[in-house]
Length: 392
Image (cartoon, rainbow, N blue to C red):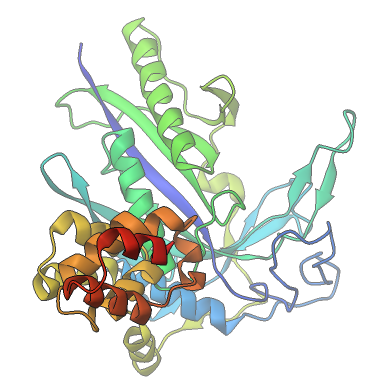
């Protein structure tokens, strides 16, 4: 029997604010354990949370950039569970009244485009983390991350393959970085993903039993974990067994997923409105101000580069994949007669010299100087070999 996969993703993006969602503690990564905490994020008795307005601004930008409807009134809820890295005994999140609803992204799939619907985007605070590296017999708790602001971006189960999942997360990451609400650094945990995976007989509409793979923090791990889980579930069904609804983790060394615990339902968390926080009310004037502050998004920039500068779509796709790279190209293109030559030089020569897209802003050759060099090449005053020596 042929099976098909049904995949939904929950992407957790850390918002790039300087302070936490409900307190003034810093969100800086890499500080000594428990050095960025205060009574609020430690859950001390008698303290009250104060909502950081910059968090709302960034979350609204994320919602607008992903074509979401914005709720004029949303509410925080307490998600109750016990874990050593959760000092209050509950996490402040949003449940039945999230900030953003019914969005979508389009991804490249096969020979065309595919729409991936976004169910919701909601705000929540991060938990701390357990540290196991100091002892074989005990764990330590670092609460620097507790209270760091997150948006959880929940897709509908519209994804069919691991490749589509990667394409979706990459596109989402690019957008969040473009609008400067998340640095997208997966190694530091700024962007991580949970994958809900099920399989069903091909052509059937009824969904199979899903498993959730938690805390995937690289594109490679997302792909490997989903591919393995699809094969595992197919093997279970083909042998006459039943897939168990559960939460699983991915072992990157062995390339397998393994059971962590039975999958919780919403009622297990006993959600209820947080009595310490007022509803979040977004009026039209404030929303319009946020909308006007958004930059040109990657898809719009890609189309404009093709139309305005007459460069191939593949080149425009690469140039628009990073905001610093796109801005560098555009500034250079203003000062040259042949924008295609500028595109070729940046893609073939400049990208060879930079470590990654984050270092483009510090690249020692300003775009105006590169434009001047390209004009000299075009006029025959400097040959390409000499230009490459000058450039490097």
